[in-house]
Every structure is written in structure tokens, then in C-alpha cells.
Image 1 (tube, rainbow, N blue to C red):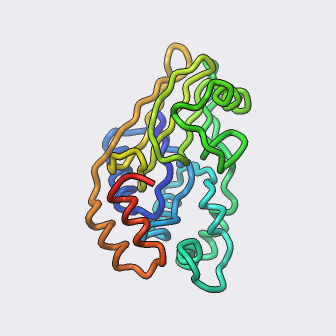
Image 2: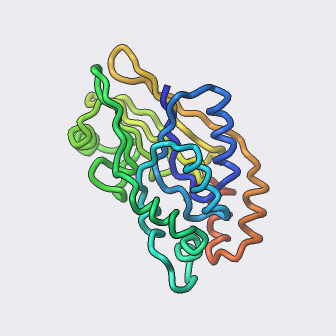
Length: 227
């Protein structure tokens, strides 16, 4: 069984809850789909926890945004970057673009957004030509990604398309932390989405007590589970 977790966005409370659930389930492999730190009140702690776990991690768009050393805190990006050690910023800067699990029945590929970009958008109702491009460029029978913070599993003629949702900042109306589980199936892969409650009140209180210039926006998104 493989778990894909993505889009943590500095929400340590959500991350800890998800990891506790994965430990309870005895999941053998965990892959992190990027966007570890930006947004929430505990960016450094989230990066440190993932690094301690030693999971494979791929690069998200916000991981790229915060890899420089800021001269001054001017917005949420530089606030986050200023709280990461130089070694953590180097770690984020060096993350690979994708992760692949090879299998005779078809490979599983994890990307942040698409197999060609860390910023392009593929939604649950993406048109067939766009979905076909995802599988053609991934050379896989299952593709898992995050980025849009909206969890879904979609069977297509080209393969299994899965959005693992967001651990720390869902945008699908359900504030609970989200992750995906993948298992080999007779033909390709099978996937399921799981939601976990966490101490959202503690996360919101920490955000509002911080001096992050964009703490209010992050808190609103956590409260509403919407963009």
C-alpha cells in the first residue's frame, strides 16, 4: 500500500494527524507531493517532520517560491522563507519533479500538478484531451497529484487519475485533512481518498497569533475549506 500526501502548507496539526493515521494503518510507503511549508504558522516544523521521516518528496510550486533567502519580510512567502534554515531551503530547492513506482501492470507516477509542470491545473472534470496528455507524458497507468487541493478519483480510458487533496488546506468544502491510498490491482492500480479530523482550532489560533502578513487569508481558507 502506498500513501500520497500533499499540500501540507505549514499546517503541523493536520500533518501530525495524518501521519498518526498512516502509522496506525501500517502503510509501508508514503510519498509527499510537495507544498510543505507556505501558508500556515509552522512551516519549519512541517519540513523538519517530513525530513525526519525520510519519505520521498517531490517539488511543489510553493516550495520553489520560498527557496531563496529573503532580505526582508514583505509578504507570506518571505515570512515563510525567513523561518526555514538555509539547509531546509536547499532541501526544498533540490527536490525532484516526480516519483515513480514501476510495475508490470503499469507504473504509478506522483507529480505535484502535471507531468510537465508544477503549476498547471487539472481538475476532476478536465477534458479528455488534457487527461490523455497527462498519461501520455507520465507513461503510467496511474497518476496522482495535488496542487488544486480538491480530492478525487477518476477512472479514465487512459488510466487512473487521482488527486490526493490537501493535508493542510483543502479547497473542496471539507476542512478535514486529505490523503490518498494506492494499491496494486488486477489491472493497474486502485485508489481511495481518506479524510482525517485534526485540531483545527489550535492551527487557527496559532495562525492568528503569528506575525505572518497573510495569516488572516490562510485562516479564512482553513475555516471555509475553500480558495
